[in-house]
Amino acid sequence: MTRKHLTLSHRLLMALGVVSFLFWSVMATLSTRDNIREVNTLYDVHLAHTAKAFLFLMDPDDNTLQSTPSVMPAADIEQLLNTWPDLASRPVPGEAPTAAKATASKIGQRYGASLRYQLWRDDGKLLFRSDNAPTTPISQTLGYSDAPDAQGKGWRSYAVHDNNHRVKIIISEPQQFRGQIEHSMILSAATPMALGLPVLFLLLWFSIWRGLHPLAALSQEITKRAPGNLAPMDVHSVPDEVRPIVIALNGLLERVAQTLDNERRFTDDAAHQLRTPLAVIQTQLYTVRHTLASEPHQQALDQLQGSVARSIRMVNQLLALARLDPQQAPPAFSQVNLTTLSETVCAELATLALQRQQTMELLAEPGLPSVEGNADLLSMLLSNLLDNAIHYTPPGGTIHVLLQPTRQGVTLSVCDDGPGITPDQRDKVQQRFYRLAGQNQPGTGLGLAICKRIAELHHSTLTLAEGLQGHGLTASLWLPTSDVSTPKPSQPPHH
Image (cartoon, helix red, strand yellow):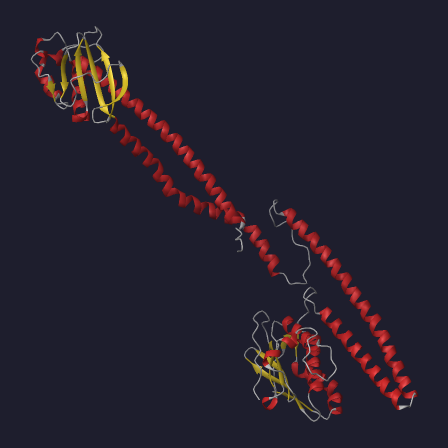
């Protein structure tokens, strides 16, 4: 099971998102807690003011109080005021008569039947109570207290004496009101956070994307670089945080360039050191061969000279592959006339085909456009394809070099009527040192590998198919006439 790696942007988004969410949650919790505490304080103050407002309205020495019903609805405070018309004109310290009446009216409108109250005389007699209040004292404690009723509901109470300690008023309100307010405040704090989190994550993602854009641009620049482009990168166009990475990368590119340069010099030196002794050995073998006339010696010398020739061919092909390595600098492209190039290569190998009594023919349509490519590499490719065709086509066979115009390009094909290659082997023969079983012709198994690499350098594909008359082999390569960046697959011609 493979582990999925998160990108840097995803990690930053998750980290910042979690930190922001926790910060918002803590701040909302603290703010809501403070607000709830303030609301409870305001409710307590309002409860105390309500109790004192009752005291301002109640006078235990008033005879009309004894005729007042002992149980009244909590909402009928206006009726109580009407029962004592003189209360409105009675001066009370700290509150004007009209204000007392207005306060009592607001009490009834605000609480309605939810408020319960009791008025006790100092001798323990219940003067009156609200219809929802019990006959026993709601609270035995002066000031604030919390206690459940018979049904288990919580009530917040406030008890206070008048200035002369003749009566005590107890007012109680359900804690349900406060719970509803607390719930509403929590919901009010959580709703904006829930709605704002997606917006926050979107803004964070955009900020991270903008912040990491230089890294993305640096990645694209590295990706688009050609394999052989080892030039240092510009350290002034990147942020300071990324600059050490670019400097280290430039150091690595410099070391790689030095290594490749050393390998290139070694390859050139090895080519010279290997070719010269092999050429000398071949010359000496030629001399010895003409000196010794005995048949056994001639056969041995022929075999030895063939081995030397194969060694020279293999060395040349290995050096060619080394120069075509992907780590080397890409070849320079220019306009190449394939007709002229093919005529030159065919002329060079015509003698070898004549020795095997083979017919070699160049078939090129007139007026072919020039193609984008490297003339030296295309000459090497055509030379290898023709050399394979000559060696593996039986004596008296036919070899055609075809140049056909195709859409936005030209197709180069080498066809023969030799034994051919089965479809299941056509990909394998393009690998290095791979040779078909049962081959009698000498070879190294590098020719088609070189051709495949040259095709890749030209943004194309070497295609193998059936040859002339339904047998043999056709090797085709499509080459563009203008735009190298849009490769097209090669299509072998039909014969």
